[in-house]
Image (cartoon, rainbow over all chains, first blue to last red; front, side):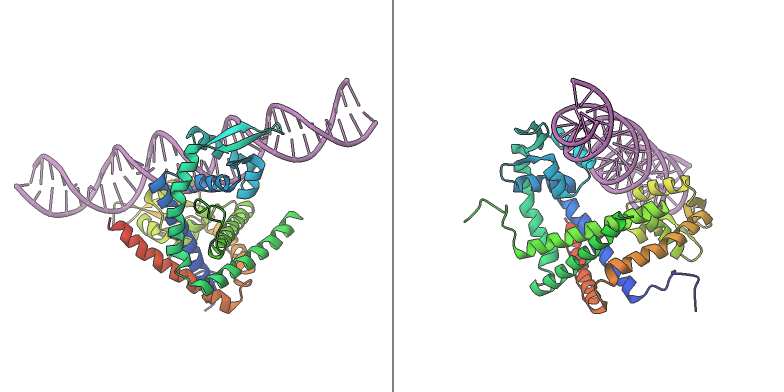
Length: 160
Length: 160
DNA sequence: CGCGCTGGGTTGATACGTCAACCAGCGGGT
DNA sequence: ACCCGCTGGTTGACGTATCAACCCAGCGCG
């Protein structure tokens, strides 16, 4: 029977798509909840802290942080003010430019160093170890392919 | 050289994890942006409308909607009031209970019927067609496995 | 009968994300 | 020197998410 449109009759592929969506939603929120509950850090906090901690001297220009996180500048700015209020980071004047740097405070450093091990452990338990090495590899490659397709598509969008 | 902790030396697996994270973030935001720009619907709007449109008579009790979307009741409630203000849904008294039902308005129905085809098309272009059938199948199976692991883990959490 | 409990649903406060407007240095042209 | 525009960054307003508190109908029990 031919229905008006899309409704009800999802094919195999669409159900698989939904499986992916479900998984990514649940996995994301699970990780986020834990890092929130156990360490009082939001996903956004976490990301910023990781990037800063990875940088050589616990500080970097705002622009670099924006590039690393791929966030909008305004989002980053808001996030930084909130984190500054909680004492996790500081805005300091940079040497060469007239633009401020972001500095990871001791408190921020301590926070991320406590949170990261638990987080990676959970990522292993829930994701990496669940798919063994070779399934993980093909999974990641699939992700990379989708990313490439996405980039192509994005270029076309911009050229409008 | 042995560093203090986790910093810098990410293994293969962790880089693959990051690839997945990147992909899921980008794919999600891309889809969301399009459905937003082109049809004035947020991802949340979209989800609610799809569930309602899939239901037999374009209406269902709030609880059922909550179960379908897996959202917190408060989130759903807020979302429904906003959508009601825009005329996409209505809260109506249900027959048997003293609890309200949610009804998909004509406007809401029209909106979702316009948006869905474009959305599914994009999902195909960016995801389903990128991985062919068999890669898609193994991908979905991997997702299902992660979901199962997640459920197990979740049970343990609740039993605290 | 009345009392308290439970569970579905709403409300309010606050944190977060996005968009558009704005502000400040710095080129570059005339 | 002046204006102009660009880029990097901040601000405000608004929509959205989360948490906790609340409201209220039904129900069990004394």
